[in-house]
Image (cartoon, one colour):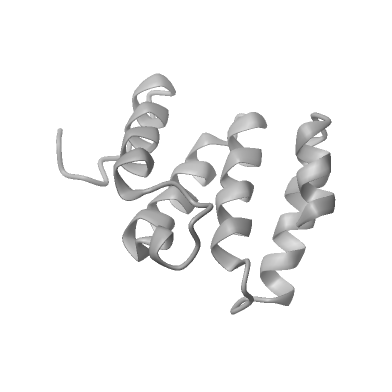
Length: 99
């Protein structure tokens, strides 16, 4: 995760995405599983892969990931981020039944 974090901080989002995806596949029940998904969602956002980012953020929202990993945003922050991504990028999604 530290190497992928370095890649994110140096704007190499595509490489960080590959690293996070590999970590998720190798360690699906690992200690950093929620953090890796959260960071992968950030990488998707930076690469304008907004639908994938929303799907990951929805997973974290539904799992209430903050109770397992304090580094992940809380449910309110995740919901706001999901709504913003959907609205700004005009995605045809309605995960919270608000339309």
